Length: 424
Ligand code: SF4
Image (cartoon, rainbow, N blue to C red; front, top):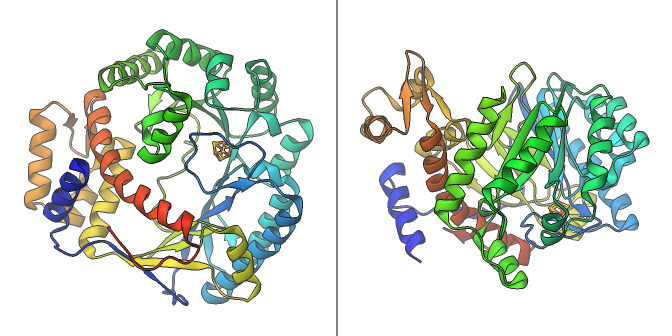
């Protein structure tokens, strides 16, 4: 309740509107003419349901996956008919577990290549239990060049606690297999701030990740997931999460360890060896999302597909776009959306900042003053860089702020395939 009041007050102050954020039902979408855009593909099928997971997913079902493939191809066609052969500046494939549909991914990417011009990286999330010589060589043959492996932990006790369906012993051979294939960058996802976990255990996981030779490591704390999902999970397990002070010391220890070992911070949670391309799942600005529950941000409108896999398929087969909700961004919201992702990157290009907000914008002046006075970051001629302290605290505030909204929208969208208006 208190968080809601605070977030609403911050929003009204920043966005400068008494109007609520409103997601409205929609029949069809009219797209502006664009030359290029990023792309997201959502594969919602999992063979394992991790208890803390808030993402839109369902259990793997062979028959349903066949229909889902046809539906995605129809959705791609729908966008092609509206936008023409535009440039696709990057593709990100997430889920669910994309590698559960390994052959279907080849068909989807081939169709995208037929209809659009791919000019950037193709990234995919993978899970250790799905990877073997055959699946990895298929990913390479599809032109996927950046890969992320959802390791989560090298400790069997924690893998079991978070309900992962593999043992730590398979992780090194899988990482070796990826490293010996032709990917330009390999990222490992690790989780920290797990119930009962100590700083020493987090660093031990990190040492193992670094010694495996991967070029990027992304460490997510459990608390970045929507509260209700984590809350249910913790009740289920009857365990407590580390408090905020412990989480902060974990983050600081991770930060220092990565920097001392030659890694560079590339986002709040991500550290890269430097000379390799950055694997990034979320920092895209304008993108089209395909699949059940996928979001799209096109020009100044955010669209959300129906979360129901069956309704998604039905709608695509009726040659309609499966968009359930849309929200039009005001200019002010668009600016803060941009700033949100720069905080996530942990640096803000000053030229773009002043161009978007104006050099004398009172909120930006206040923000820069606070960053400076509270030692949350420092500036040079071109950028404002967040310090370790700034990266942790600013993202924490931002995270609570945004998760309030995501949590509300997702929980409604998961219950109702075609929700009524959602006001937040
Ligand atoms: S964490 Fe990944 S594998 Fe586990 S249920 Fe969620 S999407 Fe599926």
